[in-house]
Length: 65
Image (cartoon, rainbow, N blue to C red; front, side):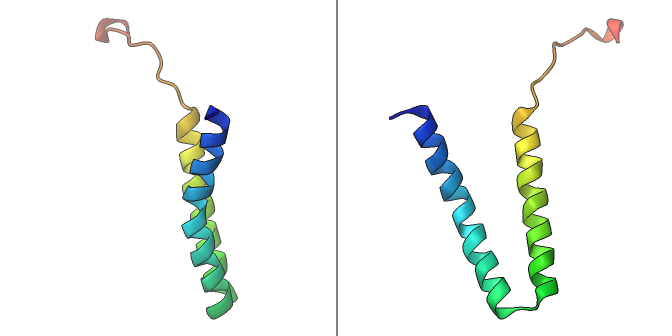
């Protein structure tokens, strides 16, 4: 399989439980609860996306720091 196809499958599988829970929250709870949930999920995925883009820099010996 193509690497891009696998990436799409992983992203959909990762988002699916959050989307289902978010739908249940928005239909059964208050709007404020849904907004708080949405904010938490956006922060979670934003942090994961930022962490995935960070690459380690070259190691410098302690004497050069």
